[in-house]
Length: 189
Ligand code: ZN
Image (tube, rainbow, N blue to C red; front, top):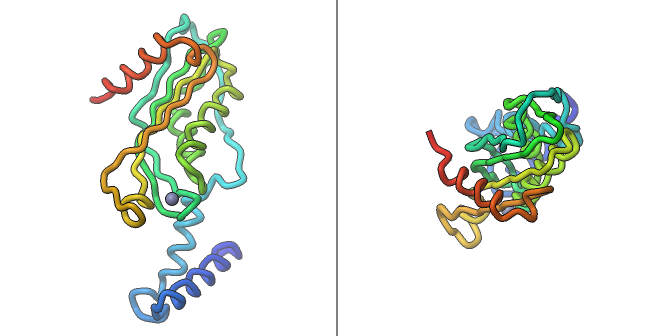
């Protein structure tokens, strides 16, 4: 184990004791180590930058470029419980500068693999794309279920939280916004 893994495993052991468990019992013997590894995996973009992408030129004629139905899994920073759902991203390129389509799901992984909240995930996708592509505009919609609302607290099972954010020409142009929202509604295979 790395020193980071060891530190977390030790803390998890203490948590197990604090909730009245016996961390030595068979079922739990490996748990601190496992939790430690999975937590580091789920938070793997903490303090990291988004890189390994290439911007290239392609004649896209001001068309809307969209990838929808992108799965994401994250941990809320208030309870460290999962929230997960789907992300829909659209942008209109500037000067035909585009990014590989597979990089959008990667970007979604990047913004969600840390302790965060849904609103920030939505905003960070826009901020990163603005930084990388300087596009004419970006639209992002996130639909999610929050385990901190469903398993505890208000216990609202199956409720879906939706956040949407626009930048650039999407901001003022209601027609473009509607085009994006229609595509979100129609996105299924
Ligand atoms: Zn929460």
